[in-house]
Amino acid sequence: MTAKPIYLDCQATTPLDPRVLAAMIPYFCESFGNPSSSSHIYGWEAQAAIAQSREIMAKSINANPEEIIFTSGATEANNLAIKGVAEANFSRGKHLITLQTEHSAVLDPCAYLVALGFEITYLPVDSLGIVNLQDLSNAIRSDTILVSIMAANNEIGVLQPLAEIGKICRDRGVFFHSDAAQAIGKIELDVEAMQIDLLSLTAHKVYGPKGIGALYIRRKNPRVNLAPQLHGGGQERGFRSGTLYPPQIVGFAKAVELAIANLAEEQNSLRQLQQQLWNAIKDLPGIYLNGDPEKRLAGNLNVSFAHINGNSLILALQPVVALSSGAACSSTKPAPSHVLTALGRSRELALASLRFGIGRFNTSAEIDQVAQKVIEVVSLLQLS
Ligand SMILES: *Cc1c(COP(=O)(O)O)cnc(C)c1O
Image 1: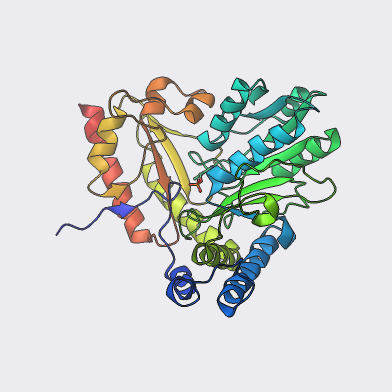
Image 2 (image 1 turned 45 degrees about the vertical axis):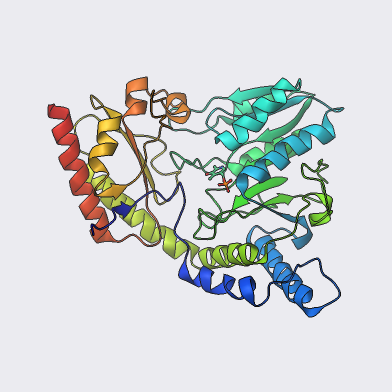
C-alpha cells in the first residue's frame, strides 16, 4: 500500500475535525427526530439542537439567531441571496454589482439574471486582487439593488475590505452581500461593524461536514426583502423549505465554534507554515506570487512559474502533494483561471500555477517535504 500524498488543498475542502464528528454522531441514530415534529421528545431534541446551533452561528458573526437560514452550502446561500434579492426588488432596479474574481457560485447566478433582463457590472481588481473602492462607488447607480463582493478569494486567498465596502453600500442604500465561504472561522466577521446585509457561509472549508451552509439575512436597519428559491413546508421562516438536517447543522456549529475559539492562534501557526513554504521556494527562477502578500488567508499561497507547462507540474507533484492549480482544468483543453487573468497574469502564467491550501492538520515537516519536491520538479521542468 502506498501512502496517500500530503493534503494541501484546503481551499477545495478540509478534513472533518474528529471533535465535529463526535458532536454529530448522536443525531444520526439516537436523536433522529424531525425538528418540525412538535408533539414528542424526538422532535423536541432535534429542535433544541438546531436552536443551539443557530445561536452559535449567529454569535459567530454578531447576528441574531432568527437571521440565520440554514442551506445546503454556500452555493445555495449565494443563489438565495442574489436571485432572491433580484426577484424581490426588480421594481426598484435591475442593476447588480460584483467582482470579476468571484466564485462561479456568484458569477453563474449573475449570468442567469442577465438572461432575465438584469444588468451586472463586473468590477476589476488591482494587480494584487483587491477591489478599488472608488470604482465601486462610481459603479453604483440609482437602479442598483445589490453589491456582491466576496470576503476571501478561493484561489488566491485575497481578503476584500468588507467594512469599507459595507459603508459605501449602506450610505448609498444598496444591499451588500458577501460570499464568506472561505472566511468563516479564518478571519473575524461582524455583520454590524462591517454593515453586511447578506452573508453566505459553508461548513466544509472549516473542518465541518459537506452539504451544509447558511445565509445570514439582515432583519432590520435595513430589512432585506428577498424571495425564497425553494418552496414547500415553510421551514426557515419560509425562506428555505425542506426538512432540516440536524447532524449536519450541529457539526457546522461545532466546527465554527472550534475555529473561532482558537482563531488568532490557529491563524498564526498557519501563517508560519505559509511563510516557511514561501521562504523555501521564493527564489526559484520565474516564480510569481499571486495575490496580496499580506491581505490574504493565512493558509493560502498561490504561485505561477514562467516557462513551465502547468499540467506537467501538477502531474509531477501528484505522488507527494495533493493540491490544485489556480485554473479550473478540463481534460481536453485547459482554461486559464479567470481570477489570475483578472490580476493581469498572462495565459501561460495562469496555466502554470499552484494553489497551496495549508490547514489545521498540516505539519512543518510536511511543508518541508512539499517544498523540496516543488524545487526538484520546477528545476527539472524548467530544464526540459
Ligand atoms: C467553496 C466555495 C463555494 C461553494 O460552497 P459549497 O458549500 O461547496 O456550495 C462558494 N464560494 C466560495 C468562495 C467557495 O470557496
